[in-house]
Length: 380
Length: 101
Image 1: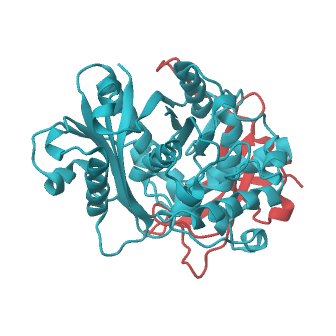
Image 2: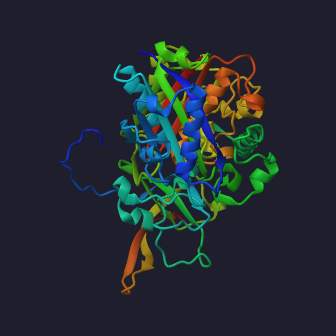
Image 3: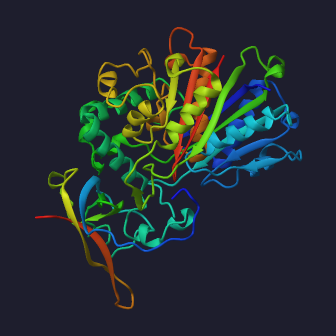
């Protein structure tokens, strides 16, 4: 049984003091229901996630107590991707016809403070000052720049592009372009990454309505089909966030594994993808994820990014809605924002951030602690 | 480990290795970070992975925090130094990686 996305809704990302995280989730859910032309009472199941804004299933208080199974999902930054896969499999199994996937969040300002205990790591690791996602991403790109000749200017160009795309997206948080000079010269956070090279924890909500593909036309004239949804955790020897030690012999990370599985499932290759949303919690992540997802070889990013290939009009548009860099990261909602953006792109409804030439295949990728990755491939 | 075995032994690692990658933590982390510092006295610190030949790569704090003096591939020693003091006055010792001079 194939699966289609027939309704999408979003609450603008950024900071909304007047609404709780839950209310932002409900806002997105109502828009998604409306978009699919379906009532909440017709929804047969839901998967949802929120890291800091309460239990996702508390949404039933806002939407209605209809008795459906509403399952909470928690997978770090890959929460949205994991919720989507769960819903995908629920429909694919033949058990359900139509359901909702949702994610929302509302985080405090400043970097996330993860608890080592929750990940099975000794408390000493946090006390010593190493329980920092920002350090991992800095160390990973530091090594990558050394091995594959990526320049600081290229790091800054990723942020520059993100803020340009954000300025075209009415739901983005950061909507003012920032120059390469200002990005490079902003406060150093974790060498080599400066303040404007990182995304910030934020707020927002997204909801999607999924149904069995053969019912899709009941809800919409423009269904988008989930050709693949995969999720992988790390294998022994991969270099991942929150790792006190690592084997000398390195293997591919969960992104590479999940990506290969997704392309196999969809029966397409990286060259076939028209638009892609790749986890960009900071600029290094976007650069490395281009290669890890098979869209280029290691080191080719330097020339591609300098030539503008990843811009909206380029040969491989990346993070067309401004990504995490311009939208911030509400953990529960972030992965679903990528899918929302791809559905807009495939419907041709992305407005000022629309990729030209009627994109047909779109790709999303999220990465989360302690080394997990989720991918989707969407087709119209 | 990928074998789900529980039969493990303690093995001594070499105390000298090469710096595999590094960064400098420029802002004071929130809880669970625990040091004797305040936001006013916080000093940025280096963090890196030391590749220990025949062993593993271990993550640890560096004694050096000047980015100009840190380079991938440089030799470093594992050293043990006082890190902070408990409320009862006990000294907490931590391991650090120090550039070989």
